Image 1: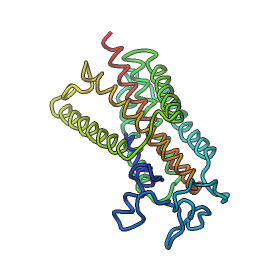
Image 2 (image 1 turned 30 degrees about the vertical axis):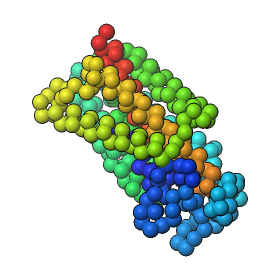
Image 3 (image 1 turned 90 degrees about the horizontal axis):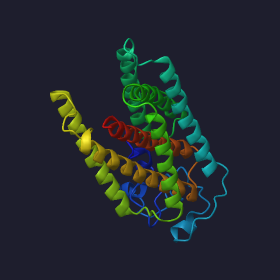
Length: 295
């Protein structure tokens, strides 16, 4: 799973003090300079009717868009609720319909792994599409939910009863805490912040990939990054990275609304937020499993 959210990084709505995203890529391609409004008027811009492009270009604060088809916070909340609701619904159904007892464990695991692979493919396809596809996003959510349901059921059955509820509460606490800190201005997303988070994420994913490779070749837990003291350390790092990704997500949503992104972008916001929350939940579940498994 990815919390770097290529969905957002390819469609960033950077302000003058924002981080590299849409504008940085456009600059490299010979397009508008960083800090320019991605929905400003211009040749070939499908959103050239932006009513406040002139004000944004001159550094004035963006005004409320006059168009009726722009993204709002209500759109983001609604689409995110639909996407996360699909994840939760299919997770509950897979928990009930795909038991992890001795007779069905192999079959349930096989279905879960297959669902995870399909979800990963759907996520990659949507990440590189120019436009949001609600059907694709909801399909990803459904398959992701199947995977999460089986894994959660197995952890609850074989490691610690009640750990799933703790992981859910922990994920909600991280989301609420980051949102509060972001709104209070305690977290300021800048280019440096963005670069640090992305570099840390790349290093983290690379280490996990190497650990998985050693685990496949030599068996066990590979290099030990997912058990014992190292497992606890990397679990905490994973959750912190997820929290940083949430801050990036909030920045992207805020800038998208301010710059009058089209309403369909709210599906991309929901998709990105779902990716991040799934990441945090899995890291939280893994960390709690290690802690309770050592008791």
